[in-house]
Amino acid sequence: MVLLNLLVKPIAIFGIDAAVQNRVPAEDYGIYFSLLNFSFLFNILLDLGINNFTTKNVAQYPEMASKYLGKVLGFRFILFILYAVVSYTVALVLNWDSYEIYLLSFLVLNQFIVALIAYARSYFGGLLMFKTDAFISVLDRFLLIIFCGILLYTPFTDTPFKIEWFIWIQTGCYAITLIVAVVLLFIQFGVPKLQYHPVFSYSIIRQSFPYALLIFLMIIYTRVDSVMVERMHWNGKTEAGFYAKGFRLLNAFFMFAMIFSNLLFPMFSKMFKLKENVIPLLATSAKLLIGGAILLSILSFFNSEYILNLIYTDHIQESNQPFQLLMFSFIGMCSTILYGTLLTARGNMTFLNSVSAIGIVVNIAMNSYLIPEYGATGAAIATVITQSLISAIQFVYSIRILKIQFKLKDTAFFIGYVTVLIVGCYFFRANSALTFMALLFASLLSMFFFRIIDVKNLKRIIAQKV
Image (cartoon, rainbow, N blue to C red; front, side, top):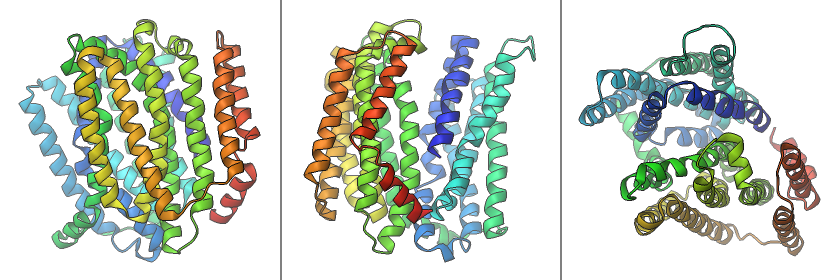
């Protein structure tokens, strides 16, 4: 799954999405970007925590997996109607014109298709069918690269690229991926009969509500900053643009980090059900995920201008500091992915929701204080503080409830690893593609040298779980 995502998603993000942004008028892409983010605002209504709930229960009770498939699918169509009604109502209140509503219709449909794909993947993940899950996870991006790549990089048409084409191609790629996922799901469980049972639906909502609440709270404290920058700073639109340059890269890295959540959640759930020891898997995952986040953060901090210059053509200096700070928040985000996934699988939802609520208060308070004077940099500082606080609370709580003990040797190796990265990146800066790749390669070697990547332990875990 990691390999496929590393091969496909960077091409989709930087080779397709960025190329589309360069080809279409800025106003057209701005409309698309605004509508896309709007379509995300209410997509919690399409899920309500059902996917996490399904993954956990399929992992723990596989014999029940096919029993409720038709009922949940029927319920999802009801949720889609609710989601569409809310989205269109708010869009009309915001006074968007007919063209924008037309584009929004495809994006609303896309969100529904993506939700169905994610639901199918929750079954594959719950059954530890990671190869199938990996294939489905990149199929839509792979198709997008092919179809959009033909229009962008070949003389297929003389007509200037239109943003509508990008949206239509996305819809088609999602639809093909959904068909493949549904066929594989039905092969595994049989063709279900779509049903709608109000009592059953209410039961699902009641049981999955803590998961939905957690997702909703996390969206607030991770996404509200960009809105507050634009609204609260005297030069808000420009500052929001500076912030977006760094946040785009952070979001790209975060997409890869989330792969660990999809892999670990069903594994942790099954291990807790069978009362197995989760600490070896947790320790190996922590080294790999958090160690990798530290590598990317330090490498990005000391080579931020070089990295930004690879992607953007202007406002590098203004975007530099927000990018550096945002990349340090990536360490906390990865820690939250790991320990949040662990605690979710264990069922500590009240604790997680309480911590997320604290995160919202801290984030909004810090943003309100910092943004008016410091703009994008202030929002980045607030993000680092919020993500670090939440991850630290989850880390300490996990240590306490699992009674985790750290070996002195492992701790010394980890400190040595971080020290070498900081010293190495401080004295050796990238000034060309060759030096940057050499620096990256040396940093990766240090992960093996200090046993952050423990090949022997990884092989043992994979042999047990596959």
